[in-house]
Image (cartoon, rainbow, N blue to C red; front, top):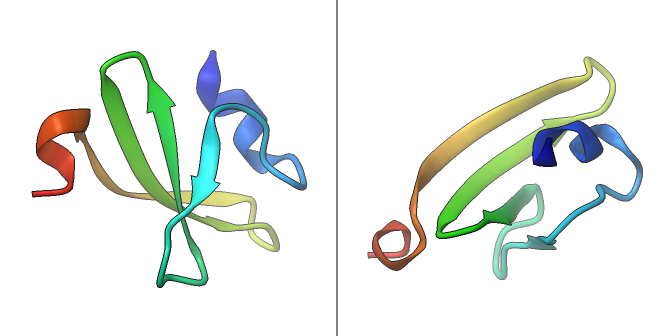
Length: 58
């Protein structure tokens, strides 16, 4: 499951930091894109946006 590697430091998977944002990352899962923030102290992943890759950045 792609979300299991998110709490690793650094996060594992097709993950990149979002340009212009210090705490946001994006994860590609097939045709979908998940934009999220990680709080390692609380072990919380806060999903900001989830959707089709072509529609997410619009």
